[in-house]
Image (cartoon, rainbow, N blue to C red; front, side):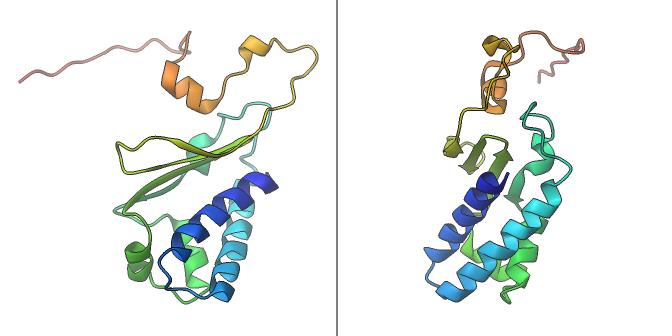
Length: 155
């Protein structure tokens, strides 16, 4: 979890650095604070054997509201939420999952991978059963756990 959390915090800090508004010391403090907040927040929601489990909980999101963990880290260096909104993209989604950290800027942006590693495969596991969260979203589940009814609206 340490690598994934560090990757996510460093990425947000790099976005802030490009503005030229913050000193290197402020960026270091922000990164450290965000790493601590993420590590604490994810402590009981990190499942390397099932990386998609808890993915929504671990998602960092800025979209008309500031992600509370990013906001908390910004407060440690004296940034207000308004300042933070002006320094970061108005729409940012970051997924921090075991073995992968990815992000998307904008609602229709491409998903970009910041960090990816291969999970260790247990000796008794079938490698075709291992699928990442991103692949599951992209290709859909092959066998949904529940049946769903689809409603369409035309107008």
